[in-house]
Picture 1 (cartoon, rainbow, N blue to C red):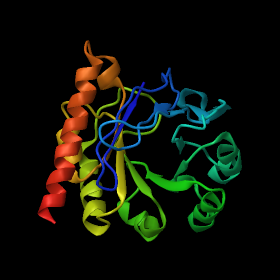
Picture 2: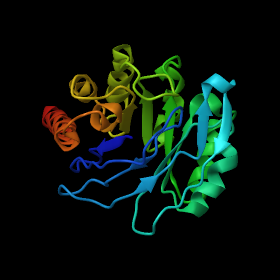
Picture 3: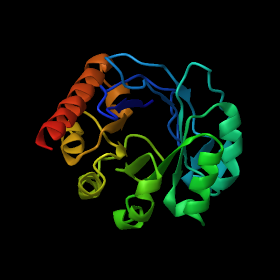
Length: 232
């Protein structure tokens, strides 16, 4: 499972548990939009399933969004352009695709906008942040993966933090998310680097007290964002 914590646009961090991830499945999420300690719930599920042991095969998984939810889809797919319309029809509010999978990021961003969704752009650990930079002013969120996409429970890659720092410096208003290996032992590094959206899975679900972990992550995220505002 994963939880997503967000502090966006000067609002408070939101948090919630998520749809379980199993085996090699990509994370589904339930998200709270920021706002005075509460928000609008959202259930999401990655549209496809990654099976590295099977040579990188994909299998489809359906998604339905409720009219009262705010939904972000993290699309770990080979051809992200073909899923834009289906996700829009399903009710997604934000469509996050991987830069490595896009033949024409500019055209894909335009298509996502025309289908009424916000745009998230993700990069894997091996992709330089400079490759994302040309698109940063055209997107709503940048996602820096802090593990290799695939299985949950991987070790956090601290050497990804300079990417987050660079993005926060160059694009102060951009939502920046980190996903992979985030928990009580690593949240401070993420928040201090400039991430304002946090995805955490194993650290929460393997804890004897998941809610306390969620609250810790949320508080660290919020405090770091407040400090950045004061330092401006």
